[in-house]
Image (tube, rainbow, N blue to C red):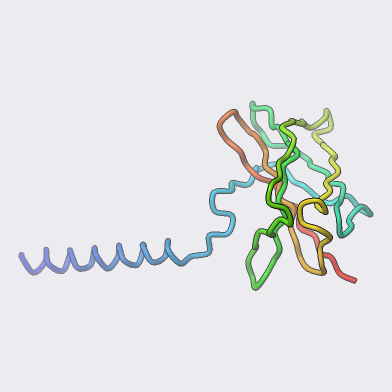
Length: 150
């Protein structure tokens, strides 16, 4: 009986170590950033430049909450198989605290100029990240990937 308890404890420790290592070393991309189901964001055709773009957000998510989209954004670059947040070129910055909602067609078009925050982007694969207020206490995210090349 003692042998069974002993091996059970050893097995439990091994499982806990494996689970702990998985949480420690697994790819944490997007950790804490829940994607808003039923919503999408794309770069509007013909508007992409190295300094900005027009985006089109479509929100058909099934929710009783009003989703609010603000001016905040972030740019990530795809490097070595993972998304890495770009470093801003200025230290002290902020965004207007304003909220936009989709229209009767479930769409919202916005112009985004990232040059002031990141400079002109080099060739590469990027994604624009925007947060969405889905309630007074929770945000979710939408993403639009794009490629810049000569």
